[in-house]
Image (cartoon, rainbow, N blue to C red; front, side, top):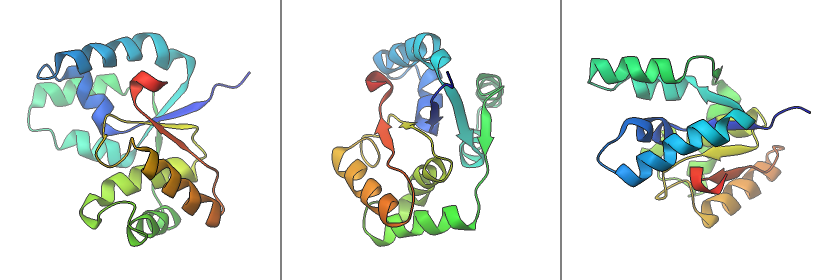
Amino acid sequence: MKKEIVYLDTSVLSAYYDKRTKERQEITVKFWNHTLPTYQVCISEITIEELENTRDEILRRKFRQLIEGFKVFKSNERIRDLARIYITRGIFPERYFDDAHHVAIASFYKVAFVVSWNFEHLVKVKTRRLVNSINLLEGFKEIEIVSPQEL
């Protein structure tokens, strides 16, 4: 049986090493070791760009090792258009285009789950409902946006 695809946004990757929020880090490491192996894991070129903006060179190297072997989705004009629609419809504020972009990439590539620790803009019932209504109108499948604890 084919594994379902999960898309990790940058918040999940950064939580793996973030000692400032110990409980979230522990949950993320457990998720990484026990849950992720049952899925096909992907990220995007946006995720890589965000990780590469990390100032700490050692941490940047750790991130590179952490994502080795993950499928990397590329963006395109249709994806950027979908992200702009999310923003135009008020799902995401314009200044959080990257959040909309993550969801649009996952929607375009028919990912089952977007996994995030971003409770402000992503992991919310309202966001899921609005994204899915736009996705259906635009010819895309519904998508689940969840925290690592929910998967």
